[in-house]
Length: 337
Ligand SMILES: *Cc1c(COP(=O)(O)O)cnc(C)c1O
Image 1 (cartoon, helix red, strand yellow):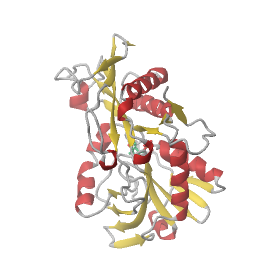
Image 2 (cartoon, protein in one colour):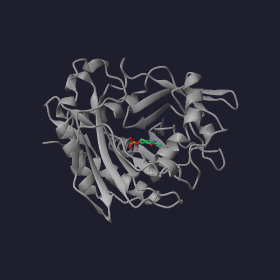
Image 3 (cartoon, helix red, strand yellow):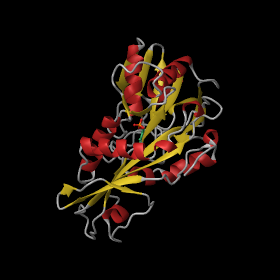
């Protein structure tokens, strides 16, 4: 594949030149295979198809001004995929195999890592799926771990644009003691109806409340929630949200900037007291939020149409580390040689 128009890439599937895969059979992982096919062959009764036995990850590689390619915090994605594997009883991918697969697939597709000045990046999507046939509800006896990549455009084409969220109490993304804290496809299937309704009504995502009491803020569909209140970075503590690696990084940067980090339950009424609100995740780093509409009570919370100064400072700091423009004191990036 040859891309010339880097500036007009969106966030969509593109078939890359290569992907890597490995199979877990008879209790062990086989060799890492390189493929140029976008297809896989699986038994029709594979557990991933019938019972949702699968997990995925999402991370990015960035080309710096110095021409070097950096991957952000891939060891954290490896650990998270191990927790997901435990949560749906799959074979775990050791961190060494996970990072080897990522380095290999990025290197093989080096020509697809967008140039520095495009603002685009290479999205990396690891997946782990039950690949053995089973019709009774039990774990598969074989697993496939594969990693695909594709170039994706800058999330904010016209710069950092605040969007709107909506609260609908009639939907839950995940149960309080369910699979919300692991990155499995089933959580995404479960969120499509609410997500579609939000999009049709002009919102970028649903802001979910805790499923047990509908009192506290959980997260925004595929991104974590955070807010700025005075000198505090506030983010929800909940058993049913996915621990975002972006959020973990922003908490560290906020603390380094002299802010207080509060990881606690956030009552929905507290939305009225925040100075800035954002959603965070690999795709956008930070999506500033300008308005949250509580559809059940016809109430709205407004945060201004321009991104807040703390959101901008955090965004620039994190992007700076990812592109190698700022020092990386915690060793978050890995240079692909
Ligand atoms: C992947 C994901 C996020 C964001 O996590 P990052 O590691 O920051 O990309 C947030 N919420 C959910 C539900 C997710 O699946």
